[in-house]
Amino acid sequence: MALDPDKYGTLDKLNQLTESHGELRFGTGMITGVIALSLAILCFLGVLAFHFPAYLTTPELRKSYSVDTLRTVMLVAMVLSGGMSLALIILGRARWLASAAFLLVALTALLGGHKVPVNDFADNTPYIGLDWFILDLLGSTLIFIFIEKLFQHRKQAVFRPEWQTDFHHFIVNHLLVGFILLIVNKLVHGGFSWAINDSLQTWIRALPFWAELLLIILVADLFQYWTHRAYHEVPVLWRLHAIHHSAKSMDWLAGSRQHVLELILTRTLVLAPIFVLGFSKEVIDAYIIIVGFQAVFNHANVSVRLGPLSYIIVTPNFHHWHHSQDKEALDRNYSAHFAFLDYLFGTAVKADRKWPEQYGVLGDYVPNGFLKQQAFPFTWDATATPPPPPPDVSSSKT
Ligand SMILES: [Zn+2]
Ligand SMILES: [Zn+2]
Image 1 (spheres, helix red, strand yellow):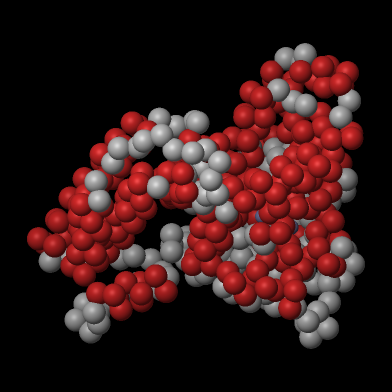
Image 2 (cartoon, rainbow, N blue to C red):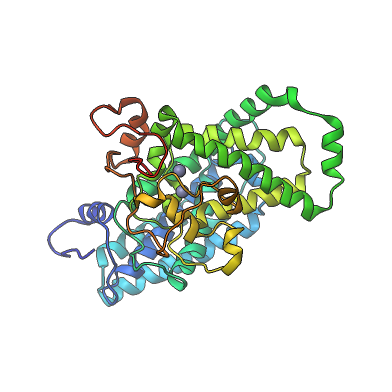
């Protein structure tokens, strides 16, 4: 990521920057500039969310945060972004990037910044989850980039190849959160209410917290395991799931790469038993935090050595094999929480190496790019590319 400062206008250079990938070089102002611009963009989106909360924030999420805390976070981000960009402008480093960040922070301040009053508003409007996008992006980058730098498995730039595609998936999955929740809720309630058994629900709610929590994770992972295995073994489902496997670089962001229909289908089939069994609210909340963390963490570019516990708990070391093109790992390691499920059902990877060599779909037939990937399941001519063979070790997919 080295750009000639004199050759292009600021917008061209910003465009070029978002289309490029690679290591940001130290000492050029690029790292500070990219952080300043990212914060400035989030502040700008934040001020829009303050102005139009009914349409740009998530009702389920609004209940769990305090607007005053968010105002403080926004003020800190504005000061940091403004300060960093001003320093770069004075020092004459990455001025084009710094000016863009500074202008955006100034615009945010003009629009009211962290002080925009939030009045009462209707609760049942259609919305996009802009607040969920801003907060999750901020939290995830802070946590996972830190963890990945600290326990890095392979040397890899933050902006590695195809980061744009995964980020595009991340953006859309977050903005559509309300739409996805609505559909999943309708499918779960409409399709599975018949299976509810009151005495079973009472028994489950009487369990101690930890027992109920272990049970919910076990139930969720059992359903996740068989759903996931079906995605690999049923050709029409593989069309959807191939998108998730097309990531050739693994990191926390790669976990976002998923077809929207797969997201809805998997979530419905995993939440259905949780709804039917009637787990208590605290346990469901704890499960959502665990699954939210582990779904991202399992893809992260880190090595976690748990010794014998690695036969029980899924780590990135375990899930990375699931994404590999190596023959011995095809259609293996389906679990998301409990690795012992794969040992139990005979699908755990047996390899003499610690890590796979190459990630992605064997044959590399999935196109790059968010929209092309959403269209892929419906447009893929399986006869033109190697058809998905039965799930054994000679299979041509991962
Ligand atoms: Zn898979
Ligand atoms: Zn995965």
